[in-house]
Image: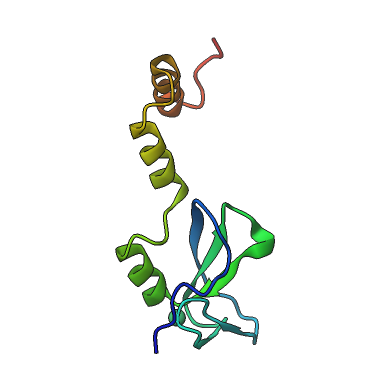
Length: 108
Ligand SMILES: [Zn+2]
């Protein structure tokens, strides 16, 4: 049974990370409504990085949502935003530069 995105959490982007815990807890997947065990490998998703609203979801459900383009990561969202080129060129260059700078470089 497939329910439409049942998270009820509007978000422009999501953080996704694999999770697995030894907690004997059972969670309900927001995408399919099915149960999942904390002890099995699954995904933790959080709307806009908000850990208090994070949900546990099946890996295959996350993959399906991603394939359908409904679960945008922060990186993808930023990329799409950049394509709209509202970010000035100097800012984009600055971001690229600082991202690739080695951590031990002396500060400028
Ligand atoms: Zn699921």
